[in-house]
Picture 1 (tube, helix red, strand yellow):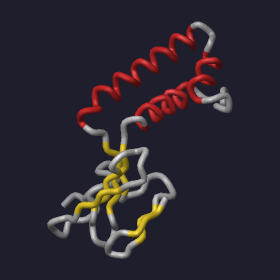
Picture 2 (tube, one colour; picture 1 turned 60 degrees about the vertical axis):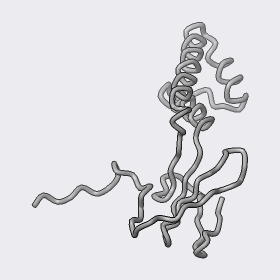
Picture 3 (tube, rainbow, N blue to C red; picture 1 turned 90 degrees about the vertical axis):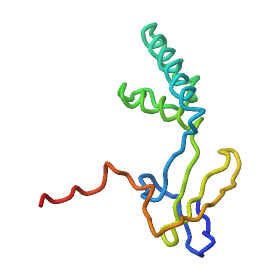
Picture 4 (cartoon, rainbow, N blue to C red; picture 1 turned 180 degrees about the horizontal axis):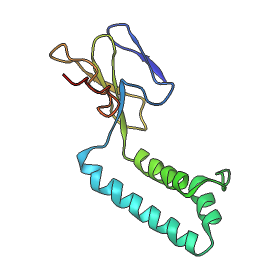
Length: 135
């Protein structure tokens, strides 16, 4: 996906780990999100214990889902799929700082807001920032 900001800059979403892209989970959906994942994880673990992991994964992800994945990868995929049901994307124009919110996941409509100051990079990871050198 790509779109043109009002300032003319083209915002591209063609890979993961972009410093100008984030996911939004509305506060109203926070509980539903984790509760939903807990239910899916419970169902998966019960199917796994019953020897029906292959059937569960086929019905949940589709028949083409790889069956030889490590348990951690399967759990990652289960969590990602559940989170995707509740998340919307946010983008920041790297040129002017305008923030674009995905209004609704099924619609291709973005709503923008202009920053009041000069602050940029507000969607960048705090965990990935380089550590400051000791003084």
